[in-house]
Amino acid sequence: DPNIRHWIAMGALAVGDYEEATKQWTTQAEELQQIAVLSVMGGLPMANRPLDPVPMLQQLMLLRNRDTFGYSSWPAGAYASGASIQTAGFPSSLPLDASLPLLNVALCQVELGQSEKAVERFKQLLEVDPNSRYRPLAAFYIRALTGEIIDEIPPSAYVPVWDGMFAPDPAIAEKPEKKAPTETPKPTEKPE
Image (cartoon, rainbow, N blue to C red; front, side, top):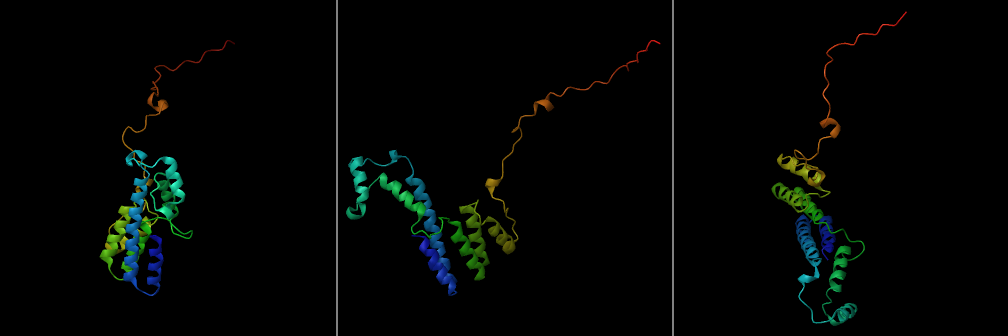
């Protein structure tokens, strides 16, 4: 469980062992990225799986007893493992977010005075998850440490606009031109 590394790192941090905390959070970030890739690949259509000689009914029966017999119970097992990946172990676990351990590593490196490494980790955080909730904090530290300005607003917040994207409003496009009057009308005389 990669989340156990978070608690080990917090324990190391409590006693001032920044190097161990950095190591644990770096490993956690790598594991979370691997889990993210595997969960995406596990959700691919069944056609990518080689045919299994065990019929589907037997597969479902083996799902109940997979711990006892050690059989692979695909496809039902794939869905069960996908659900377990989403819940990530014990109930008090953290969400599967690879940007949090990277932020923690970068902050530890700031504390250790390793500003170049910290900037690399902050930039890695922005590469791994450009829409991270920690983006404003990473942008702040990058600017404070290097002077480089990073946009705090995530890329997903911008709406691309290009020329011709919007059609002109018909009321504006077909607006009639006003003609200047040639003669002013004379008032009609009233009979007395």
